[in-house]
Length: 257
Image 1: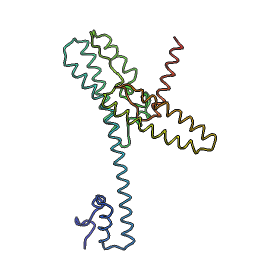
Image 2: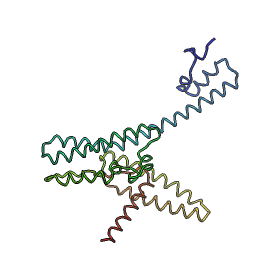
Image 3: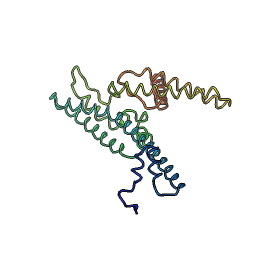
Image 4: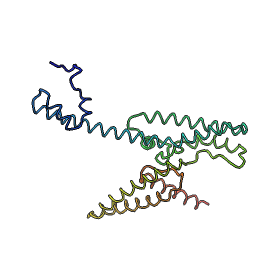
């Protein structure tokens, strides 16, 4: 008689690799009560669905971290190339300190990415001092950390091709992909909000939905206007909030002048 430790006895992992029909056939051959067979099939199907969902979430999180880190890795690579050029100690020092900060941030983010459930946006929302929902790596660098590096760059005699640290830009290929995804996702959420608005009868609900539709449409318009290389947010909500805050700041600065 086979025991639970018998290597020939199908394991849960073995069953989870099977297709539904294959699973049902395998369990039907087991010498078990009929009702237990049915429960066993159902429990394995539920577990398989649960794992599939978790795997999809993990893949999404890995993609978000990969896309977030890509511009940082790109800038690190560029600065390393620049440091191979002998153009004075001041330039070398400025680039060196800038590189050290970026590599430290990269190491920190890689560690964060290994924590289950973490995404760049979720980490940014849980910490103070990270701006724009942490959309771009430069949003993670405080003014205090930027200041000494900016001073070093100011002291360099750059000539025609001046290097500007902490530019909020991403590679063009990544920009195009993220922009297309943001537009598609925002259009989908706009369609859902419009459908809800059409059937809403309660005045308060209609007002909230009207405001939401207006905000989504504005965010969608701003998304279409994003220039090549500009950082692209993950969701329309965070994008809308950051753009409104930016425009409010611009108005205050103008009035102050």
